[in-house]
Image (cartoon, rainbow, N blue to C red; front, side, top):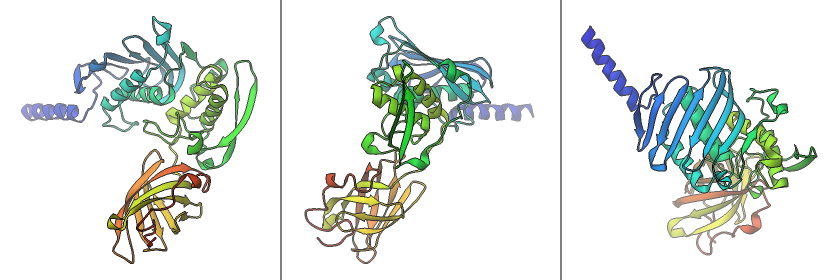
Length: 385
């Protein structure tokens, strides 16, 4: 029995390292490339990213409740992030600090951003966020926060959640999702350091205006939830647009948006609006057209095509009802900004490939910027030109 048990134990140990499991006792191990974890317990994680000369440490005051601190040590600066930890895995951001001998280094640079992205890609992701060892989960979320919610080139020293916001902490799930308002005009409220209050409005999620309301800069990011839209992120975007800064006058709004980024829901895909679609029929020719997708599951193109559409998950189907009645099938990227796939005629033998880019949530606003069809050959519907 002892031999069998010993053999089984060796197999288990080998298997856990193969799948990237982080045990709850201290150890030193290379995970992938030059990423080394020097210690991993239920309340601590330390390691280094040798080629980038970066070290990291996660310390928890308790395995389920209390405080959490993440330290990212770069050659010229140290980033420190403090959280309140509650209900097992919920994080409420309380402070963000950068320490550097040279004041000009108190910012995230383009190089820092690339290093963080490389570190994120190197970290183990065998487990889901719910089952990942807690220190590793905190580190993963912190790196996503730094990449998607800390702007490049904006200097700061210490950012702390205001006393007003801290009264309710930790309460990271007190977000208000605005997924259902994408494509619609919404009002937001923000204030300045002098106490002045502003009420402005914008269209939610419009690529024309950098997808206002999405948690993170612009219309895409690297996080596992690229389509989080909340009222707090909307308010911060309006504040940033007004004052021209992410922090400073907008620090309170940023803290609220950062919590939403960590725990807000990922919205479903939103396809209504104007797309630019490029298509290639092989010997039949190729072209570009504007694709107008409507709320009633109908669509039209500016080269005469029309039909109906439906989506299942990230799989999109455009069924033309004229021309050679082609079926365009493919997938929409997680960013919600591009789609691609193949098409085949229903009443002829033509087939080909297509790719599309989301231009605006308005089904007509961007039509003038899209070329009409191909110079020769067939249109998007496969009809002869």
